[in-house]
Image (cartoon, rainbow, N blue to C red; front, top):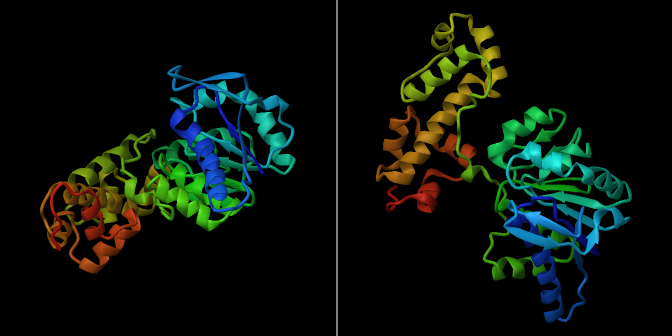
Length: 325
């Protein structure tokens, strides 16, 4: 099986090398256990020598992308820096990616590599994953694509994509398992000290109020929520801030923030709870009351839905102080 790792112009070296090294390692483990190595791995690019991380590294490609007429799996890492500039710099690669996919090649994007893959049109009408911090930018630029909030791996047919940062390792391991076997993927995960079955990037997400919109009155409401999240709030009071009716307010708020007012209040409260669990010795009940909840079951359920962890699990993972039940 031929695995071609695209070395994009000004690529992120920390994402370009992992798939290359991992599939090479898979061959080593297969050989060690008396099996035949099944992967042939190569770097492909627009030029023979490709700059990465703004010139900090140089990658020597094995073949030029224009000379690759067929491969089994093409992996697209992210580009360093501004995503719009990155896709522009690598625009020449787009028709080659489209051609390879048409010829039966599977395609996988790693993290922000989803932006370059999206430019090909191959994701239109499909689901995909990308870094949680770039969801709004991705949705704005590619409204025809269903980007999945919090997903570590998304698979649609023979197109794969991963979530943010270290999520790329989960997709790489998934592809190793898919095209070889579970045993080899587990051996690699142990060798590289990786969590092979992580399914959500929600635990890493930091909620930053979606204020990149022109509705200044809705921003006033957002500011009010963020300053008073511990208090009881109802839609009529929030609508009064912008001097409009409840239904009109709900429509405006959802259009501006991609959240209903209720969802926004929840996210602000959960972010405050996360910060409290990270930095204080307060127990779950104390934190619950601090952020405006009175029902323990409801608080625990919403917290796990947002972060993927229970409050105690989250504290044990990220707290600077010992957990208290």
